[in-house]
Length: 313
Image (cartoon, one colour):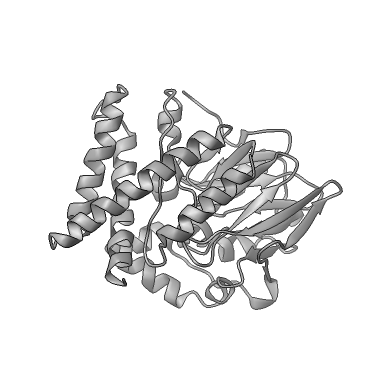
């Protein structure tokens, strides 16, 4: 199904495709058109040209942007914040208190990403521009940010994917911008009427107990929508949260088995891939579908995080 981005999700919220990794519908930037124009997630620096183009199509000048919110500081979500901020003179970057210092000094963040992406790091993420400390605003559990006369965003501490991760509740749409804590949504399959939601267990702060608690916290809110970093919106939050809840123990079981056998993340990733592919084949998705390379990459990174977690126990 062809979709034209920026995609209008409702009266106030639009979705820009950042073409993260050079892939369409991989990582999204949300634009909340309120009195204080607010962006949620920037994607990595190579996505910023797409973000700017999307803002232009929406009729939003860079000078109008007041807040650039990043759910967490992993480079696929926040790596472009410093670069975008250079052209947004009236904006501040909003981040979890535990993530602020890594925005102003991203050296450890860069080292961590290089460990995962190796030789692909430069093309995927550079440049990583530091964010000046005076332009960083931190938001912790239950903190609020008024962005319009009738809209005050609320911040929820939701670790599990990362310790420095928050989600953002939008009271008008009764939706949450969830980052990665409650999983990944595959727009490529949604176009065919298939909903697939998988946990994102990337290194090095994955915590299955905290992730489960975050899932249950959002479930208890009886939301109308979840806005995913990867990728797009679901208006069926319960079904989405149920899927991630079902996959998470499967991921853990497979990781424990691989570890007991002395296998590494590559073997684990392949086993997880076969389980997911088997499920999709049963739903009529051919092995040539364009979604599979994306799933394969996600599971490679998730397998690293699973084995990293077990190695610390």
